[in-house]
Amino acid sequence: MISVKGTYRNGVVHPDEPVEGHDGQAVLITFLEEEQILESSNGDDAAWDVIFQLIEKYAVETGTTDLADQHDHYLYGKPKHE
Image (cartoon, rainbow, N blue to C red; front, side, top):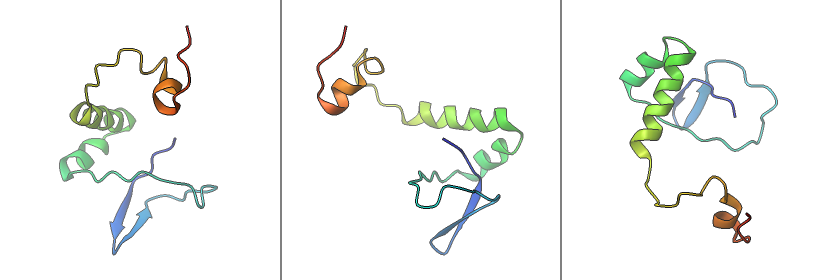
């Protein structure tokens, strides 16, 4: 996964830097509030802080304690492994 800053104008995303080798690849676009953009411009650590803040803000408690270990079971219905 890579992250690229950019601007959304007239229905089109314009990256701030060239992105080679990803034509046709699916993307996830997250619109940041102005204060988040300012915070993330202070370096890579600040950008990660913004990402972690978003994860905390939108996290959903599922009550499933083995989700990471048994993700194939929950996503694809495969038997749980020991």
